[in-house]
Image (cartoon, rainbow, N blue to C red; front, side, top):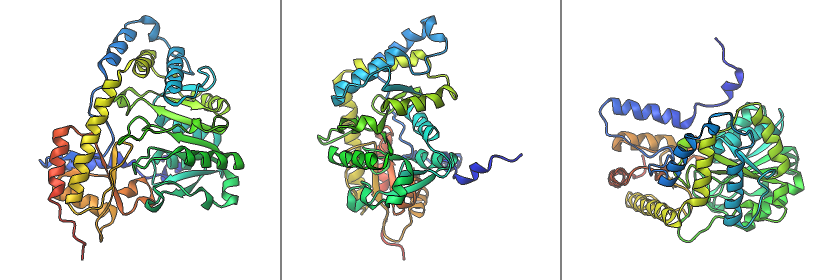
Length: 391
């Protein structure tokens, strides 16, 4: 049996490979602590679970859902967005329900990219951007995210002939994997660039609600004119600890959302309506005290891990956004070699930076989504590392 040749273009999914290594060690009796995938260990708010139970008991939710997303969910998303960012999208034309933002990020590529089209992809970045560009026959063009630029892409460095061939540009702030943040000035530059070259900006905004130290993440749609050239992808996974629920929404350009909707109506049948109604409760009924408590937990964990890595001799900056710490490997190590050494010496799983792209070489990522006691134990083990330069 021969699989499609397009599969030869893409590597195995990073986290699936990490799971194999983790499970192999556990089978040998090693106490493994997995700081790989960003899957919140904290529970979904109780009132959201209760809303799901009520909606699931309603027989009307047992039928096929709306292709666009349940009207109550789209209205809730629009209302939340307006309250959070001061931008009022039309829930009928500028909001589209998604089966998690990952699904929408993948499908927007299929809606716009023909074979040979260029897609501007951050490197390092969430693997979905590059993988689905390759699957669709498009050509990824790297936007290097470098430490000296605060992990923001240099749009002026994109050659004009490349920009003219580009259909899409992916951005992601707060950023996965680097934890970098962006301000409205950067988004203004991005919108101007997109308008100049007729490019659709796809802003992956999964982490806008996970920020620290007084930083409040903006939306690209706050920039005048952005609604004509941008779509922003929001997820309930990280703000409300709902990764397993698979629910999110896209907001922005009505024209772009119509195209994305055509792909979705021919691919999926939408998310279970009861989950959409519960998601509406998450957006509109979650107390601010709950959110503050969640962020305080992650801030405490961030500080614990940053301190542990610094004590191990690594130069680490405390991120102001996301659930991740992006840190340089010690001199003399590659990303993969250091991740392997950490796993063998400490039993702690950390993804090598190269899992997110070639410009991730020299870095590794730590997720803050392990329970407090396990994260504290991982920090204790990491403090014992000898990270002197390899000879």
